[in-house]
Image 1 (cartoon, helix red, strand yellow):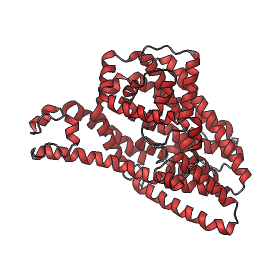
Image 2: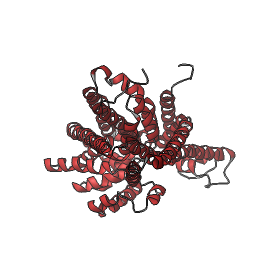
Image 3: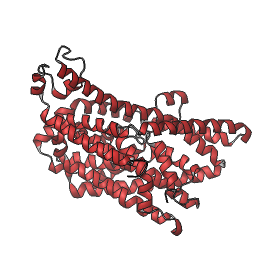
Image 4: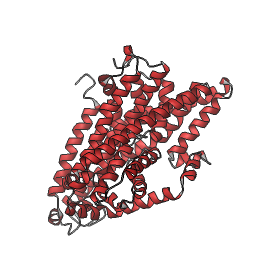
Length: 461
């Protein structure tokens, strides 16, 4: 501990551990019998725990318990909504600043191509890791029939809603999807947080600003810089709530599903986490060591020290879009210049989803094994390609990748009802894969800066 107190990521980890313990205790010992003892009747334990309107005539103890549950849920949701509030402004204004700041349209094109090549390379490696792990571990063979039936029953309703959402996305077709990236009404895209359209609008506006005289574009860029700085100030305030929010979110999750639901699909969860760890601790460091100059290498210590704040927020929020302001600062601490960071990171929130693609591949292979389906080589390739494609279009928001998973499942004929089983541990895995997604954005910044010869010494050294 230093003069400024304990680092944020340690506070979050402590809150995570406490949340797991409290949530497990509630799930194990706070039963319907407990509610009946408090005069609530036969209400379901955790549902009644959250429901402030039910059994309004119950005693003081029951009312206090309901208030605590409602407050717990409020804090978690307030934190997530606060992060979503800043996601669109930071993507919009930081990308406008980045594109306009580059100035030269040809340089924008060169940096853009390098960014996309880096995204595609890391994505291909992540998908390959996922296929190999999914085949070697075969996590679907470890789930018992009893556990499968229980989880399916518990999450059937939520799974059905997400499958319907996926059908709507699939039915629009590839060309309609690509056409939909360019917004007809950019203000509508901003209002509805359609991130792909927001990125397109910001990019085009930035290009337009480079094509007019500096005396006219200058005030617009200055305005965008002011708004971006204001949002960053809000981020620092919101982050003070992160440990408490993580505690509340984890308590709610574990109290609802219990440790049993997690342990029944433990092999699957560990397979995903192992794959994410290989990407984070092997693929990314090796890539950065390969492209950075000898006297200014980005190694393990430099990378993880700079990325700790962004990875902490990514874990607690499960949102790469919400984490963007902190990711930008972490990438700057790694030594990437502002003009590259402000260009690459906003694009990465929608285009760079290595963790999501890996998660979807292992999930599809897991469900195929669970249902006793033997996928052919062609189907394995289909799963990898489809997971990579839909990951690019996945919004950087909590739970969005589960919706896209239904498209991948249908591409190889795996029953989409299996999504209900994945939902049992999706929240935990969502937190983990978001760490990889935001880390990949910073890695791309380092790679592009290294190739441009503009990588600076680490600011944290």
